[in-house]
Image (tube, rainbow, N blue to C red; front, top):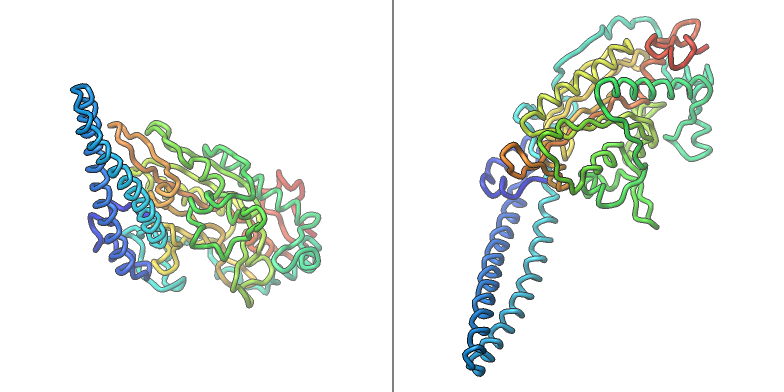
Length: 423
């Protein structure tokens, strides 16, 4: 959530920045500022009321000491009226606070100045590419045919058990999944991330704090009876470790990683782009999350991007890095890099990671603060990224490493799989 003082001090700047996300905030900002003015006026009236009550309390005591009972009783009546007014002002203030909060959560995060303008994915900026995608010129089978041939992933069985988008991994396919998870977790640990194992369901407060509510409610699985949500990513529970927390500047950087299953309804997804492993309702992912000093968060974002790239380099997959444009960046992000691998058979790029800096947007909702070097209380910055999401990494490995003899296992995974080929 944006900070009210930022909106108050420079509303036109906020409006202009949000236009990069193709979001017209003019009316919303004006409504927020109107209620903010009312809140400050109400607070001033309340402060004056409390000050007057304090003065009267002193006078009443003195009058009783002087034996001026009638005058004291008259002042007590004034105090009673002031207390009734105070209660009404407190109720009015709570109502206005609720109204302004309902409006504030409708505002997306302001994009960083480096975010390019654009309407959608076609306007994203390629900032790096490694590996020659055009080298894959020989005919190749798509992964959904190969997994059936080698009996390692069963989509039909998943439909039988649950429904579309819930595949069953079998045999060497299941072992490959486990190998990727362990490889990603071990790599994160080697790079200073503390491993945590979070819950797979969160409460409403947690989903709100990281920005899934109210923006992405339709994309989440909701357990109605308990009012809990299945997590769309480990970012949600891991970031919420620091909800309502006050840190010290010396605590930074805080680095966590977590493996989890992820659950997404993917409402509205259809067509060829959802075939096989391209888009699932349940999938595995290793997430990296950092809490950082505001002065260092963009340096940290670059480090996280480089780390994600290093995983793809070690897997030997052709990949590219995109800086997302305003029309494709998420509601909560200030700057996002997407990492995409090339699919040999599909001849397309598949996203396997989004690495984002949320600046203070999540921290404001989380009430995640720290005392800086001067003792001043400030909001921290939060960042996260997939390192990596498994389905499309698996698809790319299966398609890019296919041979007449079988699917060759990337060398870096062999200590985990204990086999060199899927045949």
